Amino acid sequence: MKVILIGDSGHARVIADNVISNGDTVIARLDDKYTELEKRNDCWYGPSSSVHELIRDEQAKVIIAIGANAIRRKIVDKLNLSDEQYATIIHKDALVSPSAKLGHGTVVMPGVIVNAAATVGSHVILNTRLVIEHDCLIGDYAHVSPGAMITGGVTVGDGVHIGAGATVIPTKTIGAWSTIGAGSVVIDNIEAQSTAVGVPARVIKTADQTVSTTNRKV
Ligand SMILES: CC(=O)SCCNC(=O)CCNC(=O)[C@H](O)C(C)(C)COP(=O)(O)OP(=O)(O)OC[C@H]1O[C@@H](n2cnc3c(N)ncnc32)[C@H](O)[C@@H]1OP(=O)(O)O
Image 1 (cartoon, rainbow, N blue to C red):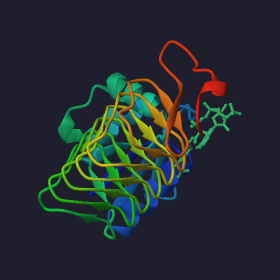
Image 2: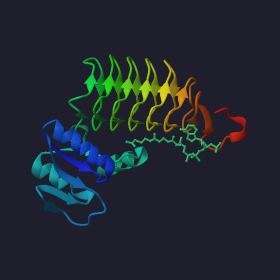
Image 3: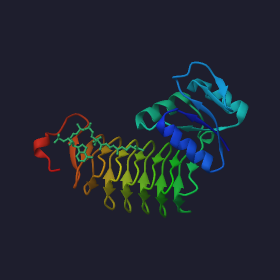
Image 4: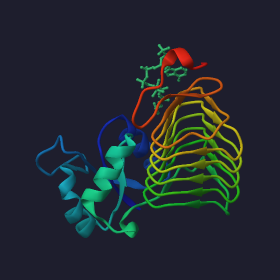
């Protein structure tokens, strides 16, 4: 498979490694820091608007290789590609249950385990060595960071960022576009657009306010 990466920073370099180690080829790295399309060392570099001609000429698939969830969504909206024009990248050293489902544009890094009947949305990042347990639902544009443990039956909303090494206990729900701090342990449902940190995780920010830090237990 030929792959076009949108984004050319650290996260894109990790995805490029995944693509190459699977035996596939990165044919372009597009980023709006480039103004003109040019080929260097067998790879195209240029602005993201070049994607349409490259898909047509090279019959390649696309990954939005940008870590920030909201920016990934913005670019998907802007490019207006069909679902089939996106790749799904699963590193050869990831274990994905045959009964799990993964959406288009989603990337599964090395050492990840996705267990039975888990459903993972589109344009999701499942980062290095995390676990998504059975029956979890992971929404579109979510990013689950390295080493996180999402236990059975958890729902992670669209655009959620789970920090490195965080744990969510079974059946809890994390509302859309929330952030969970690195190393936190979530034992309650978390409202949408909140930030929660600590062990156990307490909400420190909500959509319309910052919760007083003197009242939280972290
Ligand atoms: C391959 C890769 O690198 S993938 C990237 C993975 N990235 C991560 O895992 C980063 C996750 N991000 C975090 O943990 C961040 O600290 C966030 C998003 C939770 C909070 O960031 P900010 O909104 O900037 O909050 P800020 O740093 O101001 O901290 C606010 C308070 O929460 C506390 N806090 C922040 N993060 C944590 C945490 N992970 N655990 C416990 N407490 C925390 C701070 O100590 C501070 O407490 P205080 O008010 O008593 O001083």
